[in-house]
Length: 497
Ligand SMILES: Cc1ncc(COP(=O)(O)O)c(C=O)c1O
Image 1 (cartoon, helix red, strand yellow):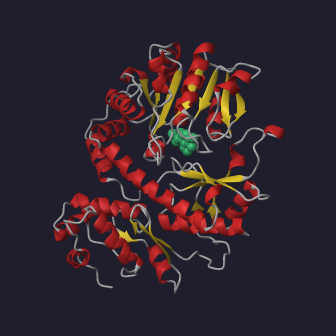
Image 2 (cartoon, rainbow, N blue to C red):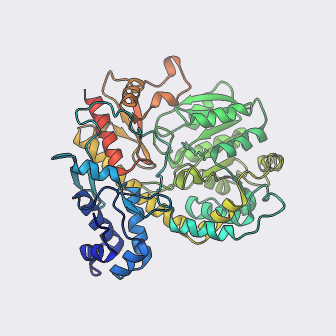
Image 3 (cartoon, rainbow, N blue to C red):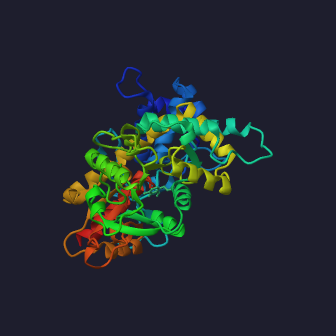
């Protein structure tokens, strides 16, 4: 097929400047419709964003935004050093024959989505194809490097490589940006001195665990984030699992424990993995409990940026300043989930003047800087230019779209009331019909090339207090829209049997 010129494509798109849809959205829907109609060949190259922008008479950034959105949805693919191209899987799915693509229509957010035929229309395993990864915890993998991130890296690349390692607590510019971000988006009044740059949640937990010293009792939500428990255990902590519901751990449960814990690990903005949110009153009660007992709250604030319904509640660490309980909350943020796990950048916020703040700083001085100077400099400029906020806003729209597809899918299959934990984040929980076990369903799906996690995998409790093995967690962050829908189809097929 002869390569389509930018002018041909511009003629086909013809954006309307007076329309309510933005120019970028119009380009997205025009291209998406044409891809779905099979008007593009497998792997067909698209004109560069600059050439298409010129042909359309719009800024290049408008086309870049449209391409980025289509990458995220899985309609386009980027290969290093090669032109942006139409993703081959989509075209094959659409061309596979009548009914191969089920157009699910337009969602509430104006996205048109298509379900390519599964690799095995009769419902057999997906063979050796790359598994569809619907495990929770994996964010959107942006095949296209966001332009603003590339720019931030270029700025950072101009900085000379020094003779010394970066400051052990972090690049002061990044610490300042994180303090501004924490105040603006999480309500935490902190100074850059209270911020320590780490490689992510596990690194922050390592610092806290080492600073607290071995033998401390740490209460943890159960089901909960098992990696956190493992890291803390490696520092000598004794983990005390507390059985929770979606809203998380309560101070009443802590008061009932036979041995008072020295700390409690919580995920208040989105209980991991059940997906609920800790009510504001419970957060206050938790801080009061911690102050009363001289205990520490370790707040894992992962994916709080992605709230889909209901107001965003300030972090628990924001209550610390209003109650005067300085040093009671250690707040952990991670850019690995909101931006990319390959970044390895996160932060720990703890009052520098508190005993824990001083102990953590000492441990960090021994360990040295963990995140490279270039990544810190780039991340600081990504924040400072407003690009991080814009990136999060775009990603949030993408997750909302996928969440809408998830809800629509299970509604269509009569399972809407089984789906919980959809108010925020990038995964949801599906309760299984009576008699079906989460671990068995996850294993069966795994055998058919679709990865999900049984909620039971996130528990440390056994015996009568263990939660029932009756649910699975479904992540909708990492896979493209067509693959997500293909995976969901398999989930419904297995559960419906
Ligand atoms: C509950 C929870 N917290 C935090 C993180 C981020 O971890 P890290 O920053 O160590 O990559 C994840 C990632 O999956 C997670 O599931």
